[in-house]
Length: 387
Ligand code: NZQ
Image 1: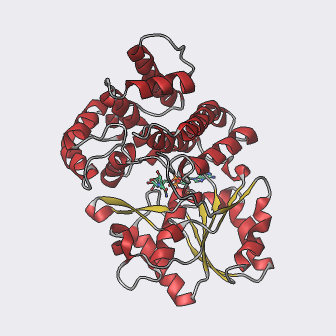
Image 2: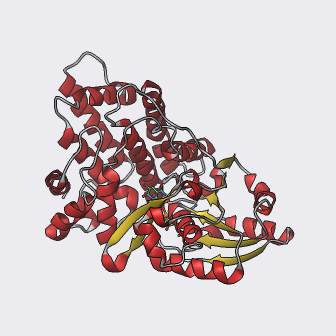
Image 3: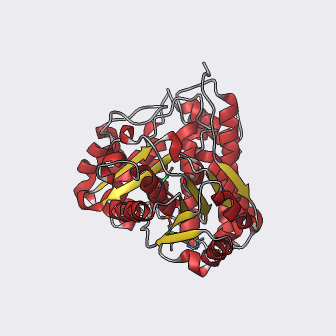
């Protein structure tokens, strides 16, 4: 029975030139900003200058935290908290992909917490208040620009954990697809796989009556399939970049999952790969997903895979159910390969040595997955099949 509360509070400014709204929007929250970004892509594509010019012209004071790592580290979060406290920051502004945004969210949430920032990553219930957060997105992938989560890594202990709080939703996000023209092939591929994976997490659910959510999920998957390859072949294609960008936000902002049972499966498995091997996030997801699909395909799940094959991959109805399901899985794998993503864990430097440990940690809170929950032995089999 569908039964849910709906709230997607982030205000979105979408389109070329929307950076112009930034100063006015910031001033609703104050005049002291911490600008958080990564390794320098925003300096190369002009976004840094666009932001800084706008802030200076409007007498908005700002401090910078640069060098946020892909798979952002808790050490960087701690640095950000220190800057915010010392300078009484009013708003944390992330400019970049999911890593810069997640780091900003963790800083904003740790700001009001008296203990160490890692505590609020391990235990979200310790978050009581959050500094306002805003984002300028440069990579269509995680959907962090419109959701309430952050994923932070403590590489010293091989832990990559997600945290969240309703107030961690950005107050506003600026989505200008032209800032994604510079995203390289591998990150475009990884981002597209991440968007598809978020959609799969909502789509392959045990909740049967969410007809509308399922059709919206299929539309997002078709959008990724159509435009992921175009964006790789023609990086400045505005139509492709804008469709991917909007798909990224809608895949995880709750639209697809409100009312559905959702117990994620590919992401908890992948988080362990990133925590131990620091691999590109979407690549891990794309390698694991077809193996997970194959592993859970049985009489209890085959109808869902038929729905997926017919509605997403346009496979003709009426053939044998398993033939449709297997063809859909094969097409999914083939699509990731067409984006240039490897198909084996060994290709990204992962060997057998840590599989058992990673499998155990994937299910640290119990079985994962909604359509067909899996345990530690199942995860281990999937990892082995993906080697
Ligand atoms: O650091 P810079 O120089 O900015 O370069 C980045 C980085 O090297 C580069 N890049 C980003 N925008 C670019 C660009 N290069 C050229 N032009 C641009 N316009 O791309 C690289 C990857 O960036 P990153 O932010 O790490 O990627 P992504 O957006 O995929 O974020 C990955 C992180 O988000 C987490 C992941 O676990 C991972 O830590 N996730 C967060 C989620 C959430 N908050 O809801 C859900 C996701 O499933 C995911 O877990």
